[in-house]
Image (tube, rainbow over all chains, first blue to last red; front, side, top):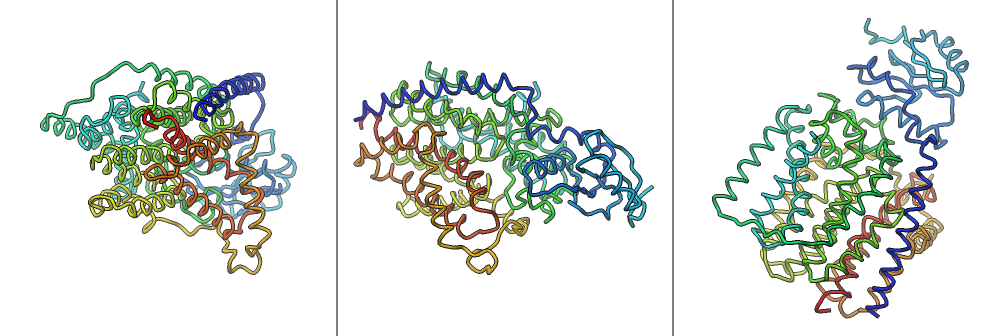
Length: 137
Length: 427
């Protein structure tokens, strides 16, 4: 029986190695696809603005229960750490609007009386909340 | 280059500490791999204590204290005239560069690792490294999605490397490969030290680490890799202690169990289960064993007593009227677990391990080897009980995202168990 198990282990190694090779070749062919782990790229650069700011707001009109939406939020949190993102709290001096479109974000910013500071074409807008109590010039 | 320097310091620290504990008791390569695992743990503890005292990541003290400690350990080794183990040729080590290639390729495909890497482990590392005196914001309730209650061993080890290289995602990729290769080496060389032939040890190791799904999990940058390494190291040191009746190996077992406890919450549970199982084995000098274990697990104890935030992702299903633990949930958990073990993604490896173990019952289920089996059963039972009691998450989603990782970290230890029961030269 010992030899049978040994033979099965050798066959496992051969099968695993073949499958792993195919898997890696598949990855190579799809290397440029956008994955969850690229979602944070659109927030890069904001960390220079948030230097020494401990918490900022993060507003989204998307359903946070959706995996892609929560992945984007958590990627944003990782990219911007050690600044903490307070989900759907717009009382902070700086608020990131990650909306379904730039129009939705700008309408919300207008509605709240905020000033847009920086935007990209993916619906991410950084806005200043002039009503925030601890706003520093 | 700076990454290599950080690694060499960590390995040297661990190597010297290991030599002082066990002298030249183990072969050179196994000492090197266990030493590397130990060194990363020592570095992690130095930074944790500095963080605790200074409440801020100090960019000067971690290397200074590490180098001073390195000097002290070197002098102690020289004073006690401890000989280093002899270097002998071992071609089975070719397994390591072979396995490094797919790990490297896959790590490049997932440079940010898996979901929990960015939302939990690496996020904590960024707070420790960049958060200055508000690094403890990582424990804020609003970050509950980031598993705020998880211990800090892996993030702190990552911070050690960042200290030398600056913040870099590449370091996290390299560390996930490093931890996997250390586990690979410990399994390969541990089997050989426990009298399995080089060829059979290499076949068993390759069977575990060529698994495609396992390759993806290995480079996910999760603390599971650290958990797997310390658990395996603890088992190997314990089995070597039983074989050689050498108390120094028991000391090393206690150290690795202590380090295991700081890897993640499951690591603390695993450490508690393993400690309980070992103590009832009538260890020589159990007081000394416990004292060393407590010393190695001190960061975990301090973390639990002084930092551990409330777990926002916990609903007690036994008392909650809104989300009760139901029999249907229990049935789902049990069936899902059984199906998981025979899932195609494992290429039949769990079934093969079971066949191997059952085919040599008299060896596999007799102490000291049976300790791995007992641990496996108790640990899985605790994990399943937690799935049943904590009803915060929808169970289907939760199990599909976590159970495969939880059992994958046990795979090297289970294959150690199976291989020793079947392939030891005296089996």
